[in-house]
Image (cartoon, rainbow, N blue to C red; front, side, top):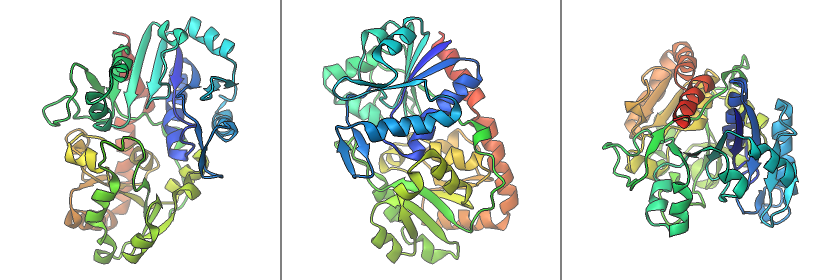
Length: 372
């Protein structure tokens, strides 16, 4: 198949966000499909060098090229700036690709437009990486926003409980199929020695969905005293209140320091002993079943993970390699368990990634639904 894939690499030029789109592109290509990346959000790009949203897309377009080129995709992308100008490949090239494309996949609002060339592609799918936030936004949205989602043939979400009795999040007349972030396992295997650090990369508060609220800060404050309960060192790559966190025993680095490219992000995960991850309050409070794409990458790298339960424990194995916590005491117990038999947990982490997140498996299932 020929697949047009929309993502948000330039809008959020950070390593973790980039890997989300990149692993779809690489995974689909490995299955024999022809892929083309498009970014068409109508928004300006964020320039982390200037720390501002810029009308000049050069940082974002350079970032896209540098992210995709090492994987042989340097000529397989186009970025549509807020003013309608095309960068990378031309508008004519995009239209020519769409003319006989088979499937349009939109990840996380990689395009907020239904241009004629997109609409003419026979099948379409939207992939929601922010379960609960997306559905709550739709529930209170203006008609154009609702209509945007109605035009997709299939809707997917990373929230395993969305649309089921396990979560009270309203879905209205929409049907949301569950999917996981696909992981290209070969890109994460490593023999790099790790430091004695449980780590994560996180945003304290997000700017999007401000009217919905429910960020990580709420949940993290529940476990902020964790370093005082264990001898295990931690390191947070975070854009948040570093001084406050350090006062409570957390080592911190700027998130951008480890997220400035896909390779820096991967190196940070490879250098970690395990992940300790907290979820956004909205994911937890609404029992969404959300599971982090970042955690999947830790597991694929053979790094165990201790992450907050959002309801994902009903859908994934846990107890070895992947552990869940819901409060401070459970977090302490999870750290002790991981350190008591680390080699076994590391092995099991790799197995879980292969059994549940392998791109071949995840994307084959997604494409089967899209073909219906």
